[in-house]
Length: 214
Image (cartoon, rainbow, N blue to C red; front, side):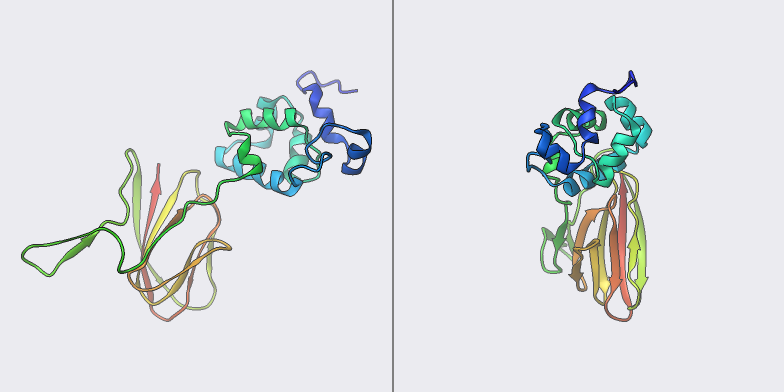
């Protein structure tokens, strides 16, 4: 029997092994053949990382034991609907995000694309690639890279976006596992708060990278 006064009664469902949950008829998502535990675990880790909260703090806000949340994030728990809903409230995230996570926002603009305006008295054209949202701060970097090992970046602070324009060479750039090959003049934007990569494919690869913090 659970003696922790800060733990919800519905939490006991998370301690039932998968096989036992099905035989006992416990109303859990996994036991009912619902969402894969791996998907829920990955979503919980992602959403907690987004908020910057610790396991202890999220568990406290949700009214569950820290060990229960740790099990769910590792994919070994068997969560009830009530437990997941409480965690979503603690993370300020819609419940649907656990079962149908949003795809990263990635935008690619090739060298000959984008809204362009020309100067009247010079051979000069300006193409808008991205407008800065209100209250944002942007840092600008010049990137020089050579073929070999890819530069794999860990997630930055929540909400960071990165924008890259390739100046010379070729490179694979973007979200880790789904990078996009860019050529001179191509542009890409992607979330910087998830793992991302820059891998030069040809010698003398040059790029401009803008990191946006909100």
